[in-house]
Image (cartoon, rainbow, N blue to C red):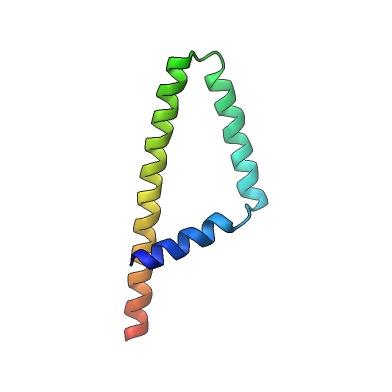
Length: 79
């Protein structure tokens, strides 16, 4: 299963963003810039740490989706 996760992650990392994804990312960056304007160094560190933890959760969710999809595909192919 780890090979499948690594393969999918590699593909996702190398794909270019769609226009829709880029627009969404731009919105997020604009809102984030507005939100963090004036943060002290300490607040920036806290915010950065929070962002890392949210990213870890997102990675776990993606891994879970890949595992479910892989198991469904394997089940269908073995029928």
